[in-house]
Image (cartoon, rainbow, N blue to C red; front, top):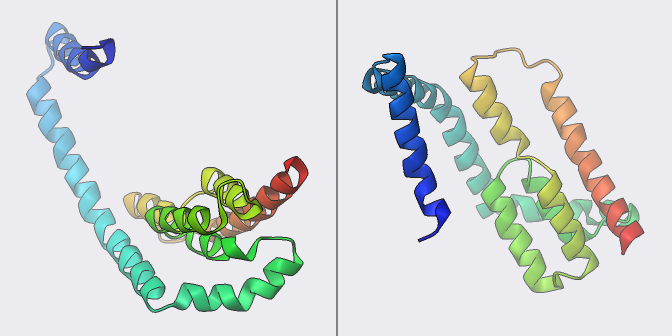
Length: 171
């Protein structure tokens, strides 16, 4: 057994001992935390469910491939690998969907190809914008998001451009 095998039990015991030392009702605080967590799940779940279903339906219908096909000439002219178009399109919506596309890019183009490297940089340096916004804005019950979505999507576009430029410079 290694040291790391004992970390979680040690942390758990440490929290219990600290709570007992301070005279805190550890079990009561734990159950209250669970109750608050379930309230958050209740508030956030509808947004997440809609997002997951919409992304799955759009991808299953071939919508991502259609949009990527239409954007391919523009992406190619900008120096962006067209193979990464679907990744760039889906990454703001779904982390697991983007990972599946990333693996597909690596299988078809290879990890050392330009497309494989650009896909790696995009996946490692971008965020699931819509997922993150739906979770955080639903958790705080924000109704007016102002310019947050536009700024986040601009960040995703800049990420794709900088990823391509970085790979071109370093390749």
